[in-house]
Amino acid sequence: MKQFPLITAHTGCMGHPDHSLASLNAALALGVDVYEDDIRITRDGKLVLAHDDEVVLADGRQTRLSDMALEELEEFSQEERLPLESVLRWIKKTGRTMNLDLKSAACLEPAAAMLLTMDMTDQAFFSGCEYSVALEADRVTPSIRKLLNVNIDSFRNGSYAEAVAQACNEGRAARCFGLNVPYPLVRPELIAAARHVGLAVYVWTVSEPDDMRRMAGMGVDSITTRNVAALLAVKANMINPEGESGS
Image (cartoon, rainbow, N blue to C red):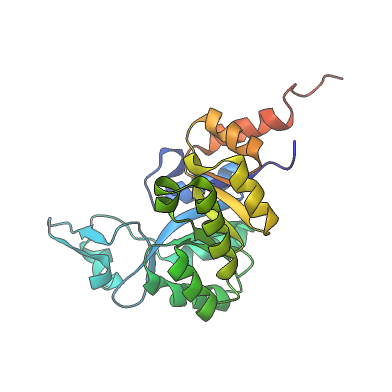
């Protein structure tokens, strides 16, 4: 078969809590190519790993991460909040790549500035970019690679061919390097159309080995999963289905 897709570990991989150091370490120990995590920004401009803006404090009060300073989060939040900068330092040291899933457009410029300062533009890229955000990213941070999050509604509500054309046109217009697609939406014609215009196809989030094999067989460029061990087993089987021959 052609080269196996990049293995991307979704935050919370291998059963560890989301946005945790344990999840990151488990992924790196297994040898993933890419580590993906969600990025948000605090009131004082600090980038942290988090999916939701809503925060429940230790005393039960609900507030927003974006309304709190990092120091306040560390003091009052029930959950540990890992600063993006410390995670990127570790990624840089290991030589791996990080997928920064931007959960707020406010993260765009500070995240880009951090990557430039740390000389990590070749070890990180942005996702979470719908078309408008991808265009803004191209305007303010053209040197940072990015994936276009395809318009899911266009696939669900219109013709598949039209949705594919829209995704490819928007990806090219925003100068993305690829498309970020929920795996159930992927068909061979999407892969072919993306290849034709020079776009990679990254799929998320795949849990079952049969779906992993199907995506790899179609020729996607990256598979995101929480179960890295299962994807590694699929890779080993597809690359060498007979197993190693004896001497």
